[in-house]
Amino acid sequence: MSRHTLHVSLWKLLRYPFPVWYCNHWLNWLHRQYERDRKQAQTQAEKEALWSQEQFEAAEYFGERETVRTRRLVAKARRLHISVEDLPIPSNQESHWQEGDFGHRYLSDRSQAAMYRAIWQARKEYWDFWLKITGAIIAALTGLVGATIGLLAFLTKKR
Image (cartoon, rainbow, N blue to C red):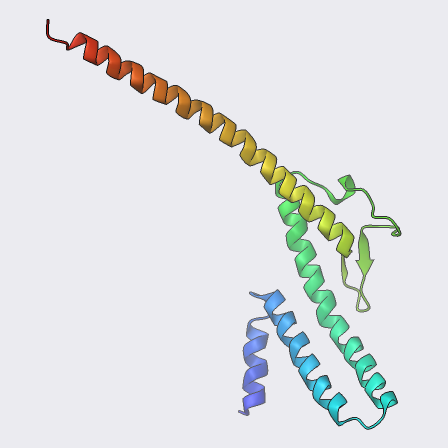
């Protein structure tokens, strides 16, 4: 088994448990391969053709990576009862969704940023609520413990 075949087999095993790593790895690998070829290209037209070919090949991995990220982001939002439809549609866009060249469907960059902000805000409100309640309970318990100590000191005081 050649080194390249082993490399490909290893990364194929990682495709499903770690899809973002898998896509990033192959995007970087493609970039390195085409960068090497562009250095060897003689004319500007050859370099542009190689760049265009790299963009086409990378689009599949990019679309898959963005689809996974969108799926994870939407799942986080659903746990916090946030829907994509609740977010305002960004200016200069008709929808929150983009369609990739290979049929991948994912949130646009602006919609992803808005979703991250909405998730952050919901988590902040959640923790603010629980910190207020926890603070009130701790203050009440501290007062109760202080009162109990005072009462015990008064009752056990020698006369």
